Image: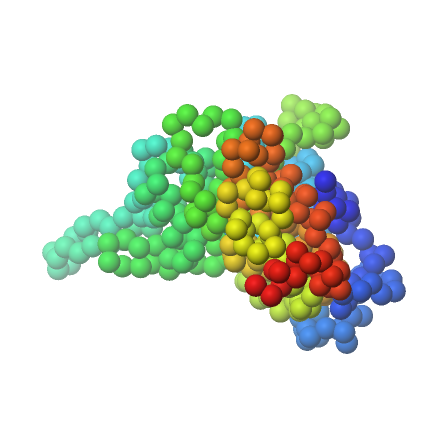
Length: 388
């Protein structure tokens, strides 16, 4: 069951009725004024202005994407949060749900170079990273190597059906994601920022695929589910795509502006009790550790690592700014727990036989974890986690 905060991301506008500061709710503040909270935070006035700019950019991006994408509000929000956090995403959904169109449209909105790579079983690492060729100098007659960049040398990369290519090519992509460099021969070539990888997976056809190992999936900040549209949205899609109607997308942000907003996100303060809550939430997924709930031991064979904690906190910072707040709340952590944790939890045979998915595990985990610091310390099981 999703929380009210998570439900708010399903197309609803960010609420301005409640503003979180240091772990408690305070009186309503003007919706268009983040600067009203500057005295209660560690952000400078310039950062407050940048935070307002991020929220404005978010609203403008949604408006531009709505010209070509119908619905999928939660997917778009999670993609933009990952972008502002300098993260990467896996998108999983059946064919025909506009995953490619969504990503290419996002690239147009951001004035960034877009590159689409169709992953196939015969794709080699050099096909995506680039290769060295021998070139003859016309003047001197000498021969020398010259590097020809591959499609990875762009800002937004669509790795279409990443599970259809062999592990060696997957590893080349993952090196670029983690290190922001490409190694060809003995030379490392730096990729330009911003660099954002969106990989897609088809959940239906698994024959002849090379599923990403859990350790490699952990490199992705989010795993985003692209679901079927609602009846109303599908009706509008049918009307739009079967007529002569064409919408033009106007760029909203430049690469330099994105880099600036990524720096502002990292400056958002996080109260210690929010970090405690995040740690408790993640550490409960680790089978065999102190304080692990019984249902986790019954359903999981492996839990989430430290990168899950990092991604939850940085993602919550971006989400707080998108919703007009300069402090992170537990509702931000809860809303992002699903995309952050679903590909980092490994269910066992018992869970599979009972029809238990990772999302159901995460939902129950959120329900059974107290949100207040005092309640965390009162729970005997959770106290074991806090002192372990």
